[in-house]
Image 1 (cartoon, helix red, strand yellow):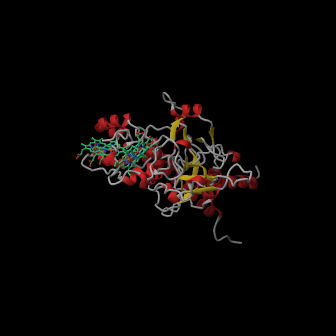
Image 2 (tube, chains in turn yellow, orange; image 1 turned 60 degrees about the vertical axis):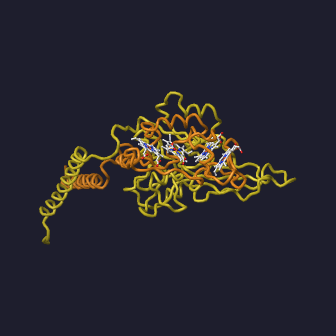
Image 3 (cartoon, rainbow over the protein chains, first blue to last red; image 1 turned 60 degrees about the horizontal axis):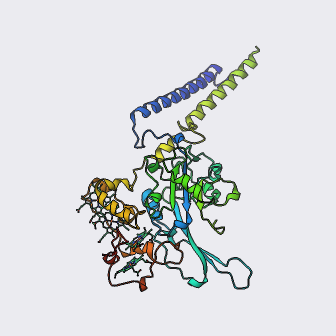
Length: 270
Length: 146
């Protein structure tokens, strides 16, 4: 039988194809090297993520619920305006007194967060004499040591950076939404404009320049404390905070090992 | 070596090499440098310009106000919490900054039922009215009454 394509031709084509691919790869490496030298990014130089480990602490007793942090976060990070898109938000907990004779320690728990607390909180409609206690709880990404959101990402678009920030790579995210489902704290959302997952970055563009995250910067009562575990400063606020308070994390039973610590947290908060 | 084995080895090698090249071409350059993600994404996340200038940025020209502020009860509040984003103004003082009005004061001081006990709150309809808050309280020194 006569072959329409000879073995020699076949081998030559295959070899040529391989050589072509190999030279493509070489060209790409060369381009990458040239790009590294020629193209300057606006990213701050000299920031080494291995030299830092960021941590956030909240003193629930200090939060007055002004909501300036929520507003600052949206301004700083150009977060879409809608009432469901928040990288940080404030919840108001109102715990009612138990019914007399019910034998309970506390009554109904009411939680509200109008527009995430961005415009502050209006006076509550619950009559004063029915309130057992009430407080505000600021929330953001819990910076989990074992983060469920990065484990479920099918493409490696969300990750734990070496400095402890949990980031999303918007150029690599396919918008499948698995991470939004996986986060037990509800800290992620799908950005309606870019169609990719978005979350608190600890204001990565600020902390890499030596500034504090916008919410910490704007907080009027030092309810938010932010610091670096690898470089404690003199009278480090983080160390002092942990020494002074009994600290707790949200949903510790999930084993996510959050690095966002809360002082004066009530058991009703989840 | 029998020729058929030799051909098999060649074929296997060709398949492995083309897999390695295809894999190399399909993964981004910096993937795997730090972990199972694009290391370049870190630099990209750090790229945007900050919006809020930060507390230190105002001291250069307004040290006097900062000193006043630190003496009173508003000492923990940053300038930008009451005056808004000040980055442009700090670079060019001709750009005017806003300041909070009464609703801004009330954001922190109105009694809304859940504020901690240590912050002084007012019930608007029971508090002295007829003037702006700043008419009776000095915003930078709230302890003082003009």
